[in-house]
Amino acid sequence: MKGCIQVYTGNGKGKTTASLGLALRAVGAGFNVFIGQFAKGSDYSELNSIQMLSDHITLKQFGQKGFIRNKPDQNDINQALDGLKLIQSIITTDQYQMIILDEVNIAIYYQLFTVDHLIEVLNSRHPSLEVILTGRYADPKIIEYADLVTEMKEIKHYFKSGIKARVGIEK
Image (cartoon, rainbow, N blue to C red):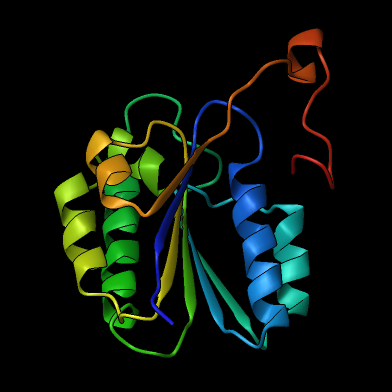
């Protein structure tokens, strides 16, 4: 089976959730999945679920607690580059059948590494490897490079009416 590059981007809710749904489906098919979360270092409820599936899903976070809100610091950059280096070391193998690079578009947007660097890494992937890239602000080069691009568009969001992130739903 030929692996494809999928992108989930846009300002709407559900990019990470969609990629985790694919991971769940992949595990059900007997796949091994690697999830690298860029610009994330916090504890989210999905980490508990993934721990329950740790025989088939490996997750590593490449970021500090919370998302980058302003200018990233050197630690943000170093963690993202370390993450990309790890991805580069496993993407050529058949150890995993799916790799999810969660918030990788945000990492590029905040210039933690370049889009060209990411594409160079993706070009070295095992031919059967499915790769999912998530995050707002997908670079036009990523959109062109990908086999599938889905934009999550916010129509209405309850955050705007004061509802905060809820455990088990958003965090």
